[in-house]
Amino acid sequence: MIVDISHILEFLPCPTPQDWIEEARKPENLSVILVDHANNELKAAQSAMAIMSRYRTGKFDRNKGRSRNDEETGGLQLKPEDQLSLLNKMSRLAREELRHYEQVLAIMARREIPYTHLGAGRYAGQLSTIIRTYEPARLVDTLIMGAFIEARSCERFAALSPWLDDELKKFYQSLLKSESRHFQDYLTLAEVINGSDIGDRVNLFAGIEQDAILSPDQNFRFHSGIPG
Image (tube, rainbow, N blue to C red):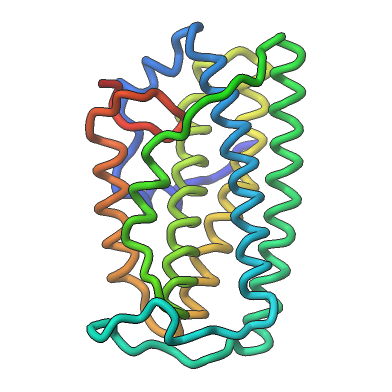
């Protein structure tokens, strides 16, 4: 089944560099790809559940983390329909990410790849540096960041799958539909909760994301930049 990810490619500020693909194709890096992939699926599920926990009542502490110079934003509570949409989409996303986590673990087990400790890459950390600290801006930025992570994951699954063995190729191509939907869910929720255009924030995150992808990176990971 061919999945159209043209909207993902239009959203991202740049494609994955060929240098990263060449590094990812090396047999010695397969264990890094799979272990980091497993870690990412687990983190994605945990992030979705953290959003559910933090915003389950739909209430914001508007003043928490606010400085005198912060822009005034939003009200004190999500609309009931937006609250339920957020919780339902995050619940579904968490379940799917945990299922993907189990699938990666099964592939690792069949290939006798140990689930060893692998330090986190810089990608998510760089994106998180511009998340605002007050609500509802914090939630909006967290959702935009989630959209970029899901979009980049989808793009890399598509870019890498032609160079993999049949099992991994089929698996990665099977993830495109769900990752694309996760991206759209995050972005749509951010737009609705913000209540106004989020283009400026998306562009700000895009600049950070592009730097993370196109600059030299000493640690090879699934979302890393150009191998340093």
